[in-house]
Length: 598
Image 1 (cartoon, rainbow, N blue to C red):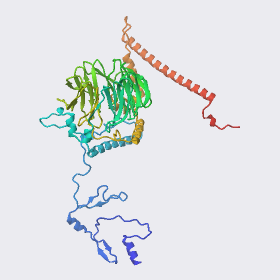
Image 2: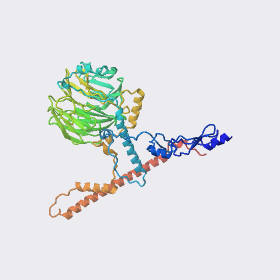
Image 3: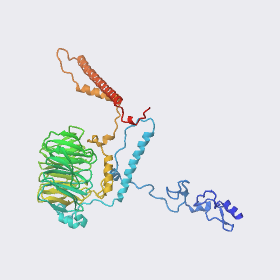
Image 4: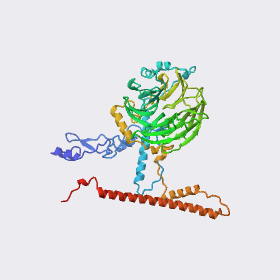
């Protein structure tokens, strides 16, 4: 019993079944007179140093870092370390250039008129989360194992003189297999299109041949002949559906070649563009109409008469979803489904425009005309940055994910590097084909350039053309069927409304802070600017008479607005009365479930 009392008095052990809490361990004890007892009950001196000895040793006490030797329930404990302090405390700094690639822009500067601090605090928290996400993405860039590289030639060599055979021999076997040629000389010339993840390819010949395939594994999905001319082909939001602009109407097929829809309103279509985030299929016809089809609903959204003749030059801005059209008078017009007039008009060439291409950031636009010039414009300022004199007019233009520009000059493909911000003195790569080129597109996330021509289709190797690292949540080339279904549902839930398409997509999230009085004042100013009293003779155009006539017009405008408002209220009241009478006469569909009293 004495031994048990001694142990309980020492505070080291605890009785079985008791609810005593265990004492936190002490790494160092400042008390020099602390003694402990051995198993026989004899006291023995502690091994800790006294306060004088610690002062002589010269070692300082430091606080424990977060997460090390600390218990969140008991609080942080101080500890002494023999190691030196970290010369670089805190997190490693992130370069501003790297952080700028992942930032989402400036924070929301609109002042909130909230009575409580809750909304302001919530917005501040969200901005902190956005900043933290950008910072973490910039730090995670070190984990990206791949990086795009370009061809490097020695002093006496030129990369433009290298052939596809030389490049295929120098790369590994898997990359060399991406260079191939499909000989289809009976149904050309061919148009082609890659999916957004770069996995699948669809080609369409002018004489009715249409085929879809997994070009990496060379597995054929479907192959049909529509028995009429094909002008263009385009994949939709997933690789199970694609659109074909045929001689008369536009058709939708699935990946097995089965016809799903026939769009008779979309006739004589020459070019097509699919807006993936809005689920819109934009078509340009030979009759001069620009039409939009909502793929999720299967209905025509709007049809705009461009009034510029045949529309055979068309592309889209991937950043803003604005459609760019090229015309025979040398102008380029920018269109949105919300406006019947062009958002902007740009005179790019003195002759007809042959091709247009826009890079993935929506900053640069390349155009080519019959005057043998290729011009690079800054879309934000609508001004030309570079002008190149070509050996022939470029019939096709294409931007890669890394900023390379491919131009089709007859039967020759020329690829230019850094030609937007700087002047490119010579092409990066060139390749000559047997026949004229009818289609040109870079494959996403691959160093491949697809070329459609009269003899079929050719896949060219262009080192440094594709983005090396892909986001599996955005575009996954290796997705399964289940992932594809989930991705389709997610895209439908996150569908952007067509009303948000404009030149400045960043202005959509802004909130108007104008009051009702300010809006009315603006409307009155607009009326005053529009109305200009006519000049009258015999003293009837004096300043007093002019002001009286102007005020009379304003007063009449106000009366008209009040009368219109009263008319709308009257119509609304009549409609409510009509619905009420109808309900009283016929009752509701739920009346059958009411209890009938005997």
